[in-house]
Image 1 (cartoon, rainbow, N blue to C red):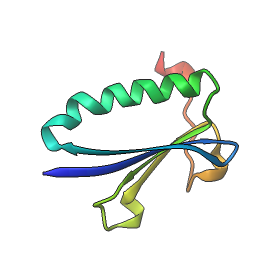
Image 2 (cartoon, rainbow, N blue to C red):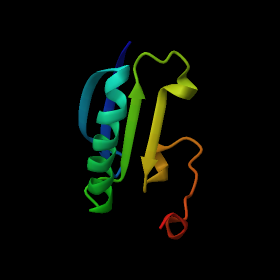
Image 3 (cartoon, rainbow, N blue to C red):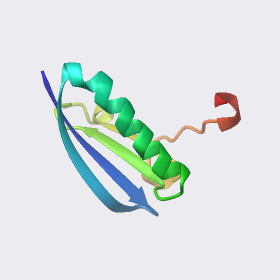
Image 4 (cartoon, rainbow, N blue to C red):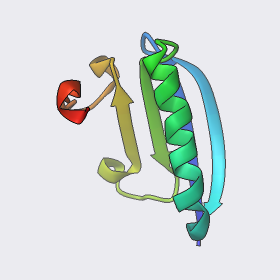
Length: 87
């Protein structure tokens, strides 16, 4: 099955870039970790404040978007994560 996704990078609540991807189910396992690493490095380097992933084929608006980052203003029900516990 083909999965249609949009990745968006935000700085101070403003859209900085947008990437579209169409991935087969068997590609997700290989491609998504590389994209996640790339986007996490951009956030760690303070180039981005928030990443949004939109699953274009998901009809449920509560499941359609995934947002993570350091700017909770653009997020719905943000959850704080203690980074010390992750290392």
